[in-house]
Length: 233
Length: 233
DNA sequence: CAGTGGTCTAGACCACGGT
DNA sequence: CCGTGGTCTAGACCACTGA
Image (cartoon, rainbow over all chains, first blue to last red; front, side):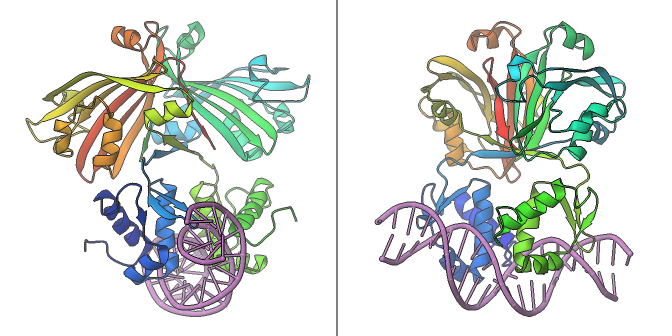
């Protein structure tokens, strides 16, 4: 018996974790039913279920009806990233945030995006180019396309005061999206805007969001040199 | 009434989501108690709780005892990354995986890591340098330090057949860790190993894992050009 | 101090999917 | 088919914390 030994679901989770870590239950091996565990711990099955469900979410065990619960063979490493609004990210660093809108116009959707981001034929999208600053030093460079069919009132926004990101969060909530992360070399424009040596490796993120079937926005964000995205597991 | 209208917790979640998306409940606004919602939906409070808990996990609402549940002002974008074992990632792409151990020796911990990765004074760590291939083309370059105090039997492993990653997953499970992602320029070595133009921007990941207080391993993985890490939200 | 979410219980029914 | 996890219920007590 270790310290954590209440019959709380977290306590039970710790004990199950211990058995997995200490190989009491081998990888791939089936572990006792919820009912048996409930009896062993002297608690309701619901409580055991809560603990096991949590372990399943983190990928440590695999659960199937009828087949029972097994210790995962290759527990995947899952990390939850929180991608904040840039202003909040900068302010959380204790630096002051500002931004500058470099371009804003209506234009056809570039062919590159036709596949992932389908808008009605011949319909223009709103294009924005923004530079984000932390303490007056460039922090990130953003290029964004907004589908006016999904957010018609964006047409009347200047986006000088409030960023498109924040405005969209409050005015065109998305239901799902795709994110990807990659690295790019600073071209001439980027190197100038982000105060980076030409050719520097820059961390970049691309995101598309939808409201149901309707695409809302496509954004590519490229961060100044030295940027790291961190998280804990 | 939409399609989803059972009294399942997912059905209730959909309805709550709808009210948030359609501004029935404004951002920052307090929503009804669990008890009231349970009455409205004609279900047990537990079921409403499950739905609200799920929304809270995804960051859409903020819950506090006594203060109630509020619609989040700036719903953070949360994304769950699954970081697989490289072999599985490559095989999932339908390509064949192989790897080659470039270096393996015992050495003192480099000063760079003294802060985050503390081992007993004067104790050597196991250093490994590995190149991962997909269909005989370089896929990723890995540099790893293993704390022999946390995984003593690693000393006897050649790591020629099984990669350190897979071996550690099965033999030295971690309790928590830090991950970060960033971009690096290909130096001479990287460009040669990864078959990349010198100076190319490469996507990189660094990870430290611990078992309790004991550091297990520090790994830096640098991917061949074109690599993207994707996920859905 | 009192209202709210957090959790636990004992029991029940059901859906899925191996055997 | 039938064992297992998934879910729901009605009720209870508790922990936290804001008014």
